[in-house]
View 1: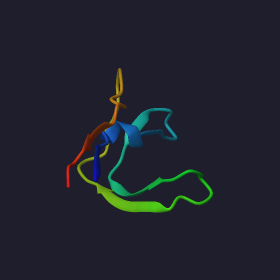
View 2: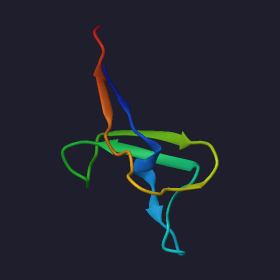
View 3: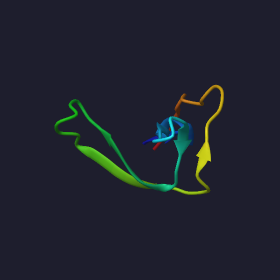
Length: 68
């Protein structure tokens, strides 16, 4: 099994006021050989307060391979 630690900054977007923001909500992660047919999907919920990102964003995803 592989686990991923995805920072909330990776789900940020530029809002109508042209500021980069992160908002709570449901997000579907998908993985596979093609964007048309990802065989693996998982819904996650981003929690916390909406916030504006300033400066550098954290975009590096930590991965860990679990034995067994």
